[in-house]
Length: 315
Image (cartoon, rainbow, N blue to C red; front, top):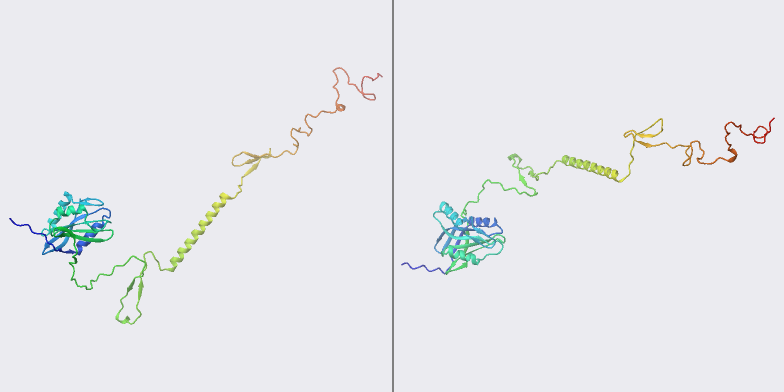
């Protein structure tokens, strides 16, 4: 029976590809409020762990303070590993701690002890809010934070030669100066500088003057319309009404509606209740002016000397 290998007391040297670090950070920042997880792909040899790739843990049970690998998560991980990395092995896992630092909680320790118990398997932790990161591994049968971590760039060694790719242009309002090539005969001439204008800016003074003129005209018309509106509602106004005079009665008639709007005043009407002739109605005549009417068949009495009466004598 083969004896069980004793755990190594020295910390392993961890080498992580720079692209793996970038993918872990990108995955963690995609969910700033819940934890995410995944596995690390590589090799474990000679007291060293080399990580060359990572696989995201899709369909994991993600929460604000913990994450759990589900059955669907493991099926996805092994499907991707068998397709892309058939000769590599799972050398650890990673997960995020959004806003609460770099450490392994009790739940994280449980996952590492039960699913990543090999001495060469590590646990990478990244905090997307503080950009802190660290790694934990097996040292002498217990889990410790590793101190020897190296980030390697697999593209290192490429020559830094001119690639012909232009420098990206920023979106700010700074002036970008573009050099203009000149012929051999113009080398002694003054260098030419071309200023790139930001989008929407015009260097034609006529366009600017025209815009100012249009703005002033519309502004003046707006003020004028506002003044007329205020004057119409706040100040009294006269209204002209066409009228016609009736030649018979002398009344003023509204041409539009046909209604009488004014009646002429009678100059003979002095006081209220007056008669048409000017004599006051109801006034009694004097006794001297009153004469009794003659009875039928009897001559009227007058005075002597032309008037007939009771004292008149027959001739």
